[in-house]
Image (cartoon, rainbow, N blue to C red; front, side):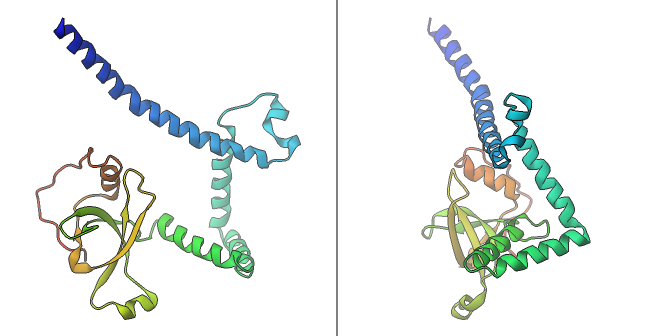
Length: 213
């Protein structure tokens, strides 16, 4: 009897291991698609697909949003589009409050999304929140502005994400000698953080990690 209970428990856990990741993935995709479908509400009443077709089409808003982003990128990639974008940004920067906010968001997005940016390009090992306690961080650059005048020595800027939500975290400036560059991709490091250490990256014993260059 105990053998049958063990087998049933094993089958049940195996089913959970198969279905839970799939269910969470579908839930996240449904949440994203549902949010993007809300963009259809920005269309005039007469242009909304439900009025034209007479029924709700799931995912249509997501498709139109992605198509719109693609078209904007296509237009902004040529010479005329670049001039229009520069003209539009110049107008926004002249508006009080909006200009400073847009400039800050633009600078961050260019750094994070640009293919030639340097943000989150290296995974690091740092001592945080106290000496002897280690966590994974990401190299974001070097300190700038007046901050440099108050730091003695060579420092780097790092982002320490929280787990299991890496979108929140802490920005730290640490001595370069106190951080260790990991032989690990950013994607592998993010998986390690999100899984709270359960999904460990493959061990690579070829060389010992050293400080980032």
